[in-house]
Length: 325
Picture 1 (cartoon, one colour):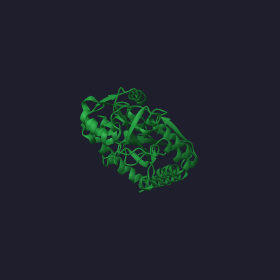
Picture 2: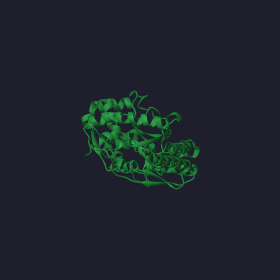
Picture 3: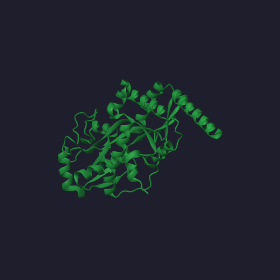
Picture 4: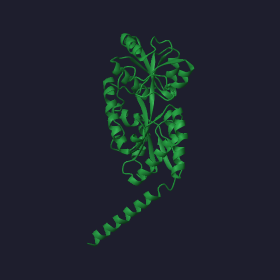
């Protein structure tokens, strides 16, 4: 009897303390883990969000870059962190969809080991070719590739990169098999595309934009259903004949599983507030990022979205035979 009373009292005190902690959150700086090197598109987006969220939350949001294993090293750190709201992750299509199939032994379960916070933005991939490629529209591109697939190649930032897997998905949609040439990053891949040593890429819009505007490569299509705000005149794959086709990267926030709901809500609300800030929207749109609509920012939507993305990317990855041990 006394033991049960003592246990109940301890539980009651812990519950009250937890509620008070959630109510006061945050009382110290928060760490946003970005699981990639500094300077890339994901890092820039995260830092833009962190700056505004720091103002909203009243505590500094510190960015920590933890690269490795295709983004899984930093993601795993958050999955195993204390579920107190002081460490959260900026995840991507790679960390929470593609890697689940690409790696023979993923370091975590993307659907079970995190608490979804909010989907933030989608960043289109752009189909770009060497400037003298004999096709100017997507239908022309598809016809040429089908007729010459054994003579062509496509470049990427490396095996398993979003750029690589985007073109794998495109090849699957076209019913073609084109040789893949992996590089150590987008910069050398883009250099060889500009030099005409490779034929095409499915590059992230923010990376491809300077070369498109400079006329050193040719943009053929935006690989999403919606045109990019920075390439408004470039037709999408969907409107050019590949109905329903989409290849893009995206960004979302995740907390460790078990984080108290009130804390998760505060982080979610700060995320949504930052997304609605005009200065933030302008900066992200300048990067080619397309902020998602309000009805897609809920944790429930993100949970369902992750499940669908894991399934979507599993088929082309398995079909390609690529597996990282």
